[in-house]
Image (cartoon, rainbow, N blue to C red; front, side):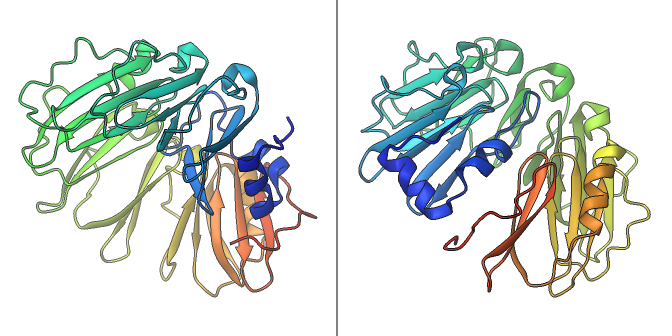
Length: 360
């Protein structure tokens, strides 16, 4: 796929000069969920489905799409000039403001929102195949897209949820909750996080997710509980999750760091869920792809990597000295050395020979 010569796309290309790399690297494949498909680059908001990009500059209304038309790569007929926010699933885009919204892409992924009332919408969240729009003032939620991935909430009773203060998602399910009261409701694929009946959310202060499981933490008491697919981190009953200060995740594994520096991993061992033999002391930064974790100590030339075997072999052979910023996709990590604008990639994609000069 080629980058559009449209104004917004040109801005993105001038900033990065690596359209081809990101067109291959950033897009999630089927079954790959990233909590946020949207990033801001020099006042341009860039969002992606699994095979298309959308670039949008809110200050001017300029926009551009490229990639697979089926998954949102054609937005010529979409008027986004008055929109202020962008969201996406793996196969559709949404541009919206507090009174209106426009969707395009595959209807099975949420690409048709013609019957949705956006009046009062304050936030939108997504799974692989569905959107949910939150109207905070009325505690109302509106869903569309794949019904088995959370796109049907007509039978979701908000019950005691007088208001919704947060919505979290796996790739297949949502949880809406009011942190102040501990009331919560889940929907979507029941085996992948859509069933939380009988669980007490009172005191929960944070919720994290993999593609198919949730983790809820109660900081005041040091308690935690998980639900969803066991192989993706949905079972943590046997773990001591007291005094947790950080949580990270891959597609099917969690990593928790305690205040004393100890680490605990669980979920799929092939995607980072086993770290019994990882010596973690002194490492200050954690990064993750969909399949592996990377622990990096500032100033050190070597990183500790665990999870996917091929990724880790590549990672262990890399020189991380001078690295100032790290970004990742589901299968590739890109590290920048700020002083030289040099970059290297770890994982499935090769970025050798690419010019990253001028990249912030």
